[in-house]
Each structure stands twice: as C-alpha cells, then as structure tokens.
Amino acid sequence: MSEELYQIIARVMKIPLSEINDDSGPKTIPSWTSFNGYVLLHELVNHFNVQFTIDEAMDVQKISDIKRHLRNHGVTLDG
Image (cartoon, rainbow, N blue to C red; front, side, top):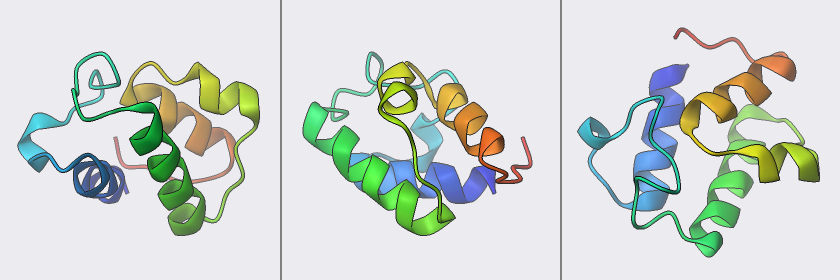
C-alpha cells in the first residue's frame, strides 16, 4: 500500500512518483502548501477509510509520519 500512498501524494501534489520517498514532506515538496495538505488529508481519509486527529494531522513532517499514523489506524503498508 505504500505505492498507493505515493500515488495519492503524487496526484495531489502534481509531482512525478519518482520524486517521492519516505523523507519527502512539506519542506521538500514545493507544491505541498497548506491547501494541498488539506486536500491530501481528505484523499487519505477517503482512500484508507480512516479519521486522523488534529494532532496527527499537525504532526506530519514527512511521508514516514503519514505511514506511522496510517499503521496506528490499522492500515497495512508494505514499506
């Protein structure tokens, strides 16, 4: 499911999949604005059928943080 996560991020941020890794985040992806962060959160909630807390949403500094929160909500990821 990491691939699915990366595909969602690439689509929302309008960047090539090849530019995404676990260390990518708002500081390394210029299109990761506050608005696109909200859109990404919405897409993740819909795709993975989870609800994030405000603290979880505010905690995201890189994609590995998103993966950690998804795992905490019972989502199985492959990487």
